[in-house]
Length: 165
Image (cartoon, rainbow, N blue to C red; front, side):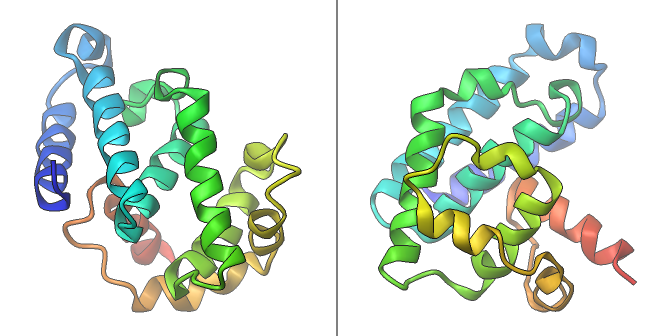
């Protein structure tokens, strides 16, 4: 699947989730779909698609902060090895000095909200360093970033934009 197809799939499932009870998620396949979406983003990220990497990173992070019945993600279903791979790909961007402006402010925010999400990643020094940066950078960056048509990542950050000031 390409990025546009995944975006549409995310938007479709976000709409469906609004109309169903979380008790129906398992039977409706919600958790399976979000796991598949995550895996598709990882595949695209392996090809160098930074937007797919951002979305995979977001889903891995979001699955840790939100209960599965709210976000549709069961963090254990994403697979520890794939989550680790996403963190390693992000670290590689940092080590090559190729981190874009958006990730530069997103990473400290993620760590500020979930300080433990990088526990056990002592070998990912660049990721830990950047994530330990000034978390309030999001205040400027979030305002300037477009989040339409970016799935759950976009939905989350649009909610932050609306409540920021």
